[in-house]
Image (cartoon, rainbow, N blue to C red):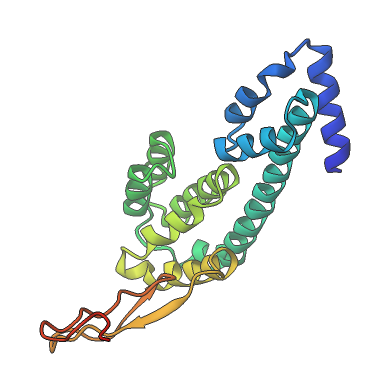
Length: 210
């Protein structure tokens, strides 16, 4: 499929008279990183046609991965949709915060508010807007989960959605327990891939002795 799309797009560019010498600029416009484009140019010095094809290939493969990520996020949302439609509390307040976070528009917020006093209708309007947002940018599902966790009545909903999101998209992150030496502090769990080294005691000799 990638090969077919690649050949098709290359042919379209030729028919439209697109200057192949601008393939680098095209790649940046498509959202590819400069380092990647520089690597393509280094691997195919002077071969402009090949550079254009490689540029389009990288873009199509990245687009394919984005589509797969969107499908995963939508699947997670649909899994929890029945419970959300029954248990989501205070939809208007949730909508206000989601609008501040850029997940939904002011128009959607107004629609949720106008559905009052029917909470089920408010939920329906809000959840319909959330699925549209996720389809445009899958990472907004994580933002949605984060916002839910800020409301006492929605913490459980937000937590399970965040858990499923992490399992699908953050498998490479290591969960490390970090103990803070303070009587008033308990063990905390951080989702990072690195740990902070312990400070060296003031009088501990360092260096090498011969």
